[in-house]
Image (cartoon, rainbow over all chains, first blue to last red; front, side, top):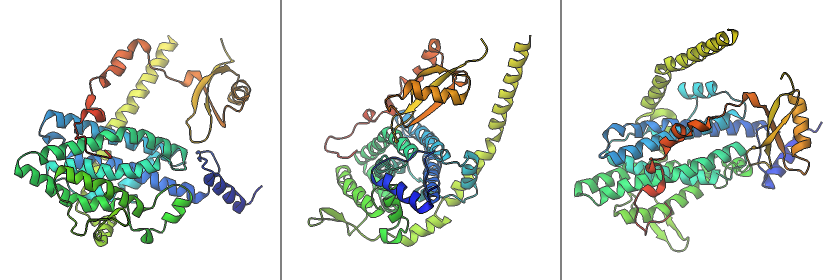
Length: 317
Length: 93
């Protein structure tokens, strides 16, 4: 029997060699726990993420927009399910995962604690929030844990329409009346900074980053991903003809990147700790959905039992 | 016929890839099915992991009902990225 230090060294060697880890492989307990936490947070984010967008399904300006938004929200539900099942391969039950979400023990992406106040917010979410999520998720398709990486491949493939859907909404508004363009600008003003916060705290404030990079859970740091997002997104705002609300934003020829202003980290931590504009509302909505859906779960079980009984009777005859 | 049931065999060719169905075999129990699967399907290092599932536990969709099963996805072009019109100069979307 090898001792734990040798096992950990062998595990690290496998990761260094680019091997993927599968559920039944030996893994350090911390690797397992970190993955349960990260994959479930990701799953919860997909599920809670349906709420701000669901808010506008009944009020879309056209039928074309309605079917697009419905399909997007439906995809988020599917993505949540892929991720919950990936988390379950690590030995945690779906019930426990839901329990953690409903009691507020588990976190989800803070971006969903902001309200969707106008139709333009749906455009801004698709463009910016999904844009930021895609950057993170493309990285995660190469993560070291097999089931997570495979779920990410599927999700990224489906996600590409989400961002285009959002950008098209923004483009239509920006080519519309001055009021419509102002609405798009207002949405950008409110969603820009929270979108940058999606990548998490600065590297020096992110104690888990080093271990996560070593285990190839993350392949880039928060700050690298944030920079990548900004560099990609600034020209997209120029195409729209609206202004990113950051007076310090400017191209740095030497770095070949955009410099940008200071993020309000106090706001970031406030929202993480539960004091964002919609934290309570989101948690309540998920609890209500679960509790009010109990009869559906019970009915499904009763139906299955009845069908099994009928089958037994039919076989006995 | 009682006994010697059919088992479906799934092989993961290497870590990181999903198990894929490769075929089936007969065996009296799960342990023998696993041993047979190794001998029948991985003689040339085709895999690093095997799943065996007794065939009767698989519920398959009915080919004669494929229409009503899969047609609903046919007319939903808006689930695809190409449905959305964006300017050519736009990059990274």
